[in-house]
Image (cartoon, rainbow, N blue to C red):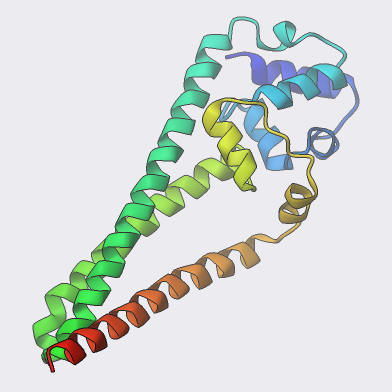
Length: 209
């Protein structure tokens, strides 16, 4: 792959830093660094912007690298889509396990030791879902995807419009705040599962008299 070297050469010739180029392509500096080191590759919209900024053709930027770029981007998009389905599927199973755990504790009045296998199962399902989420987040970060529309465009292989008010706003959020938000969403999902389990067990208990 030579596209990374071409981007770096054009950027150097234009007298721009990675931060300068990142601002004009609406991506992070880390994304520019990943492109230049051939860790990831620009999408269609980014290539169009790069060709305009460097006053060159897209063919000049990607000559000889099209097949590798296409296969890599398609592979990442497919992987991220599957990880999304995996995360949602295992979170749904975790919620069902929490409901079942609550039924065992509230309706059947089991001791915690008896419900331990169900608790461990719920924990394992949560762990798998979080593993898939972290993997998907890594791919999103590598391709600088922050909004739902950007992710969908990436999945479909369409041009990604990063110059939107929401996209600019989300890119200003510091990493530590994103981590806190992710943890909060996870705890919220667990709370919903526990609430649903308690409500379901109360209903079962009422029906059974």
